[in-house]
Amino acid sequence: MQNSKSDFYAEAGVDITAGYDAVERIKPHIQSTNRPGVLGGFGGFGGLFEPDLRGMKRPVFVSGTDGVGTKLKIALIMDKHDTIGIDCVAMCVNDIICSGAEPLFFLDYIATGKNVPSRMESIVAGVADGCRQAGCALIGGEMAEHPDMMPEDDYDIAGFSVGVVDFDNIVDGKSIKAGDMIIGLESSGLHSNGFSLVRKVFHNELTNLGVHMPDLGCTLGEELLRPTKIYAKPLLSAIRQCGKSIKGISSITGGGLYENVPRMLPEGIRAHVDASKFPPKPIFDIIAAKGDVPARDMYNTFNMGIGMVMAVSGDDADHIMSAFREHGETPIIIGQCENGDKGIDLTW
Image (cartoon, rainbow, N blue to C red; front, side, top):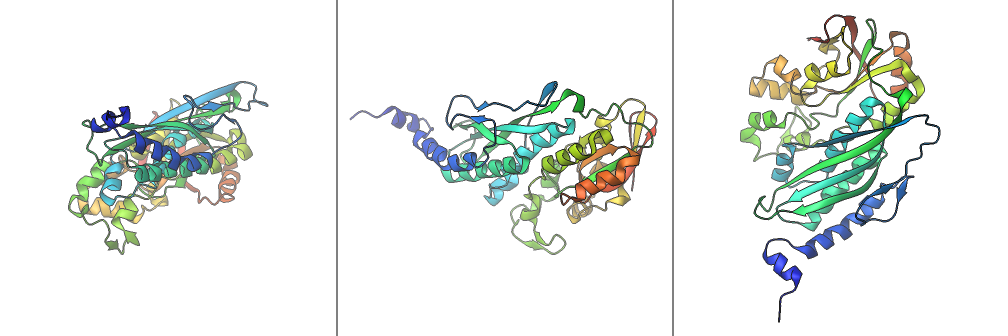
């Protein structure tokens, strides 16, 4: 009896039947993200989305793509994969909302050494959770099995998101001036940046991530895998309420405050940020002490407790703060804008 094509492919290291199983498992998770605009069913060659652009004079699409870096190593060590997808969505949508864009849809790409359907379901369930938090639809993706290129237990994930904003409502930082206030929104923890340094600092503990740490109130593994916060809904709501009073937005990702705050500033404006306004969460203090990491390096690597920063009109700062509180956020005035060379002065 001759082997079937799938048998031959399985002998080469690619299990088509496992792929079919994984697809069936992820269907309900994908369907849970549907929103107005999604066309067609799951499984087509391309994801179809028809945006409702009524009311927009000049719609502009904003796109972003990213992954979660070496945070995946922690998920693999713990064999816990249900939050990595949230991180992937967050890393994409938190960037596109910096332009004031509403996230519309998301696609993911997962490459693995061996397709394990139950693990694939956990990963995509996290992606779907992140999409629901962001208000966008998961309309497609790819699961690629790469025998001989990746170890069987290894995988990587990347995502791509598209949003839309009316041209006149783009948040670009051009109107920021001296006297404007800088507001920060709290992070959930490390988010998905700086994990190469994290793994170096905790090298000896990475085989014992299940031990409870009193200073953290949880295990080290739970803290390191805490998913990245998604700011889309509260930030877009505040923009709708406060309009152009929110002048610039910066997502605090790789490079920390030092690199990311200046990205929203126009030439001739300098940000002064007082880090004493937001004492770091315990995980950052532990990393700094255990790794003997200087303060400047900490603020140039991690978000240090602030995941999103905005430059806002000083006259409207109280109104903007209230708008965020209505959505359960805890906004903090962490500094102000001044005349000077484009950049940031950070004190603590």
